[in-house]
Every structure is written in C-alpha cells, then in structure tokens.
Amino acid sequence: MAKARHSRFDCSPGCSVEAAIGLIDGKWKSVILFHLLSGTLRFNEIRRHIVNVTPRMLTNQLRELEEDGLIVRTVYAQVPPKVEYSLSELGRTMEPILLSLKGWGDANISLFGKPKGHDPRERANETQRVNA
Amino acid sequence: MAKARHSRFDCSPGCSVEAAIGLIDGKWKSVILFHLLSGTLRFNEIRRHIVNVTPRMLTNQLRELEEDGLIVRTVYAQVPPKVEYSLSELGRTMEPILLSLKGWGDANISLFGKPKGHDPRERANETQRVNA
DNA sequence: CAGTATCCTCAATGATACTG
DNA sequence: CAGTATCATTGAGGATACTG
Image (cartoon, rainbow over all chains, first blue to last red):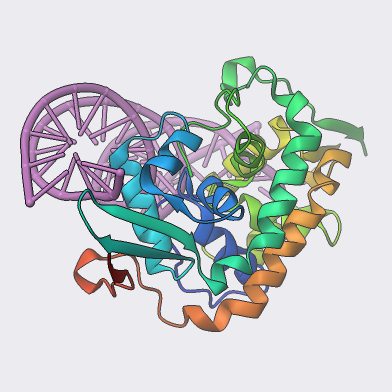
C-alpha cells in the first residue's frame, strides 16, 4: 500500500484489515515496529538495524508512526542530542501482527531466493484451466 | 509499502518481516486474501466485497498474488466466462497474519473515525521532552 | 462475466548535501 | 547525534472506455 493512508473505513468487513495494514504500510514501518519490540532505540540505532534506509525516510516513517500513536518519541534536552523511540501502549498491541509476520517470513523466506519482481514477461502462469 | 516489491532480504533479522509484508502490500491484497479465507470467490464477487476497487486494480492485485503463489486462479472453459480465485496452500499459511490484522483492526477501528492523513500542518506532536 | 487498453497524476521513495 | 533541505524519479494507483 501507499497512497491513501487510512481512507474512510466505511466498508465492511475487510475494513478492519485495511485499517490495520494502513498503519504499517510505508516501506519501513513494520520493520521499525518489529525492532522496537525488543526495546527502546535511538535514531541511529534504528538506522543501523535497517540497512539502506536514508535519514529522510527514517524520520518520515517515525513521524507517521508517532502521529498514528504507535510509538513514543522522547527528546532529551542535552548536547549532543539524544532521542529515543519506543512502542506506545497501542504500539505494543501490534505485537501479534508483527510476530505473525516475522513467523511467516522465517518459515517461508527460502521461497524468495530470487525475487520475481512481477515482470509480465517472465510470468509463470499457474492458472488452472478447467473444461466446463 | 509499494515500490520495490520483495527486494533482496540479505538483511537481518527484520528481513523476514519485510518479506512477509512485501507480499501483502499493494492497496488491496490483504483484504482480498482476507475475503478468500472464507472460501472461493469469483472476480465480480470480490469486486462487490471491496468497494471502489476498479477492475484494473483488482486484476492487477490478483495477478501479483497469483505470481507470488498465494492464490490459485481457476478458469472454466465456458461462456460466459467463469473464473474462480481461492487461497493456495501457501496462501492459507497466511491466515494467522490476516486474522491478527483483522483482530487488531476490529479492536481499534474506533480510533480512526476521522483519518488524519499525516498532514504536517495538523500535526499533533506527542513527543516527550525530557530535561537532561 | 471477466477482464483489457490508455492515459494520467501524484505521493511515496530515493540521492545528496547540509546543520543546530 | 539526529535530523533538514532540495531535487529528482517512478511506478502504484486511479479514471474511463472498450471487449471476447
């Protein structure tokens, strides 16, 4: 997902599913939340955990998670700056989601040795054809 | 998430989390999978379940889910056409994820009465400021 | 019924450089 | 250390119309 972050949710009943993933879309959010399950982390600690995330994107995702009430940002008034991120109480309620994602990924990561990338030209069509 | 669908996963250990959400990003995928938990559905049945999805997007998402091996597409050779979608065995292993998403959404959907949309101008800053 | 075909937009992500 | 500030890209998603 990407564009319309939590839309209206007047749908039914998949809406609650949409609502939930809507909060963890964003390329890095679920991973950030997952790492915060283990405890409080500072900005650059998260950067080190997540390879290839730029400071801009990390800030961006952290801000959205904060706005959505999933994480708490604590700024210590000192120099050099110290900023800590941790899961909020609401954020901690996402643990089952995060753990099921992690569990599924661990169990099936072997399947993704060579990403396919959804290139139509290399489409391995698995469609079943049934005679009426 | 959106752009780089399952990248390389040589990271650790959040990679497995990325791998998992990478398959259910896409604006409608998780909802489609959720509805298929209840059983086989035809193209237009899914359309009716998911309001506001255009045929183009639905086809698109279904194709990617099929390519990722999460759903099975069955075409009946008859007129008018009949095409059924169902979860593959692998797709069914995502049930815990889907159910935890659904559960979280149901428990917290009240929080999203008026979506915020992450507009910086209306940012309710929750950051804690601590004197060193 | 189950899609295709086009065209288009913009928001999400990225690259790079700079700073209190 | 923990970010900002700019600029550029691109492709996911949408609108609309058509079809075997």
